[in-house]
Amino acid sequence: MLLSVEQCRAARALLGWSTNALADAAKLGLATVRRFETGNPVQPSSVEAMQKALESAGITLIGAGKSSPQGGEGVRFSPPPQG
Image 1 (cartoon, rainbow, N blue to C red):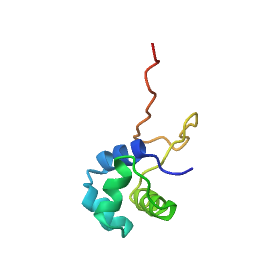
Image 2: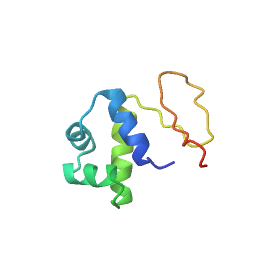
Image 3: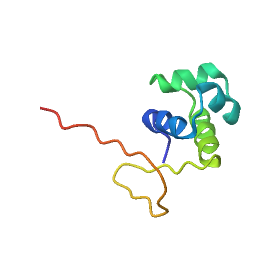
């Protein structure tokens, strides 16, 4: 599973990390993190680096339709129904 923009923002919020903190932890440039979080394309290797940094800090990512058997605090986003 690859990190989504929404997961990235939520994970940073749970950790109390700024975009600078994530960039430092992932060993990426601040512009890369900001570009990703605004929905612009970045290299898959950069997304993987951000994901690994967040997971190393204790974040468990939950994919759409998946559960989190480990429990713990988390965030799940379900868009409201259209209409």
